[in-house]
Image 1 (cartoon, rainbow, N blue to C red):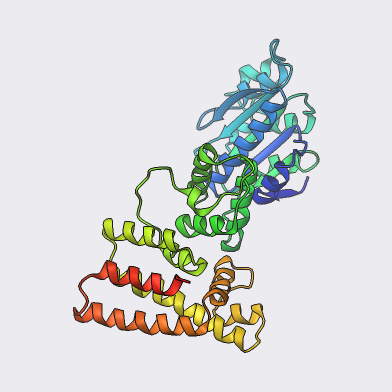
Image 2: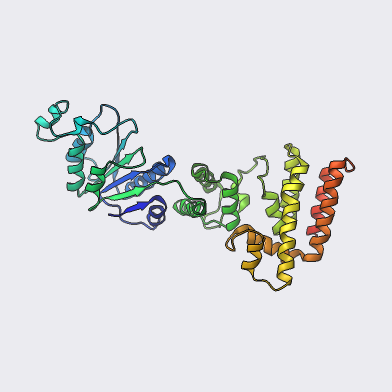
Length: 355
């Protein structure tokens, strides 16, 4: 079979695809290797397979794995046999047919080195499954050639930046979750390309979220947790016109020691500037694509869409008034003329978002 990447497999795996008798997992991304393996094992366990795990390191051979393949289990008609080939193992001369160290195994007519594994891959047709996990960037050439006919090969490459949202959706789908665009953007802004942290956060969401209800940004926090608002979370609430969440995030940020200069200069003023640009271009009859391009964003970007919605919600005149007030407030903070910074920022948000 052609080599699949992990993203393509996870997308197709969620729809209940049939898994080949032999699956070979490799690639440089350690978390994806483990996540793909877990996905396959869960699918096979639901199909009635019993799991067996082995690992092969320095000085080990494949004898135990091959014996498990050849010997049927009295209590489990179908086995899911996972063999993890550790990074420390390298192709050695003792894998050849004339190896003296493996003489005992071959005396019985069955080898236990890599040639025997290759033969098992070519001949294996089930009813169980053989899963090979290579803790390296690629599987050995002999193994890949043997697997090209009927085995499933999954390459776990490091994701590109434009694939992170697709991985979020694939992981969420495997957990039975529906994601809102705001929740996807918040996960990515919070964890970046750390897929392990994203999967962990989504696993926590399954505990608290109602089934069938799309996950919202507020669902990504554990109930009762007092955490520092993430960067741009306040800007998102500002663009959405959500007064109560914005004031709550501002209060938590001050209580946990976030710098008011940073809040104003990094989140509030730049978001107002983006909404002003969008409002002026929309008033001039420009398309959404041209507005997003002027802001340096993709038309498919969730932040661009929320900025445009905020521009339509507030209007250019209100945004200009609030923007100049924010700039004067920034100067007052730096010159020491404004002391009650939390109240000043709260008043600014209320003035902008109040009907």
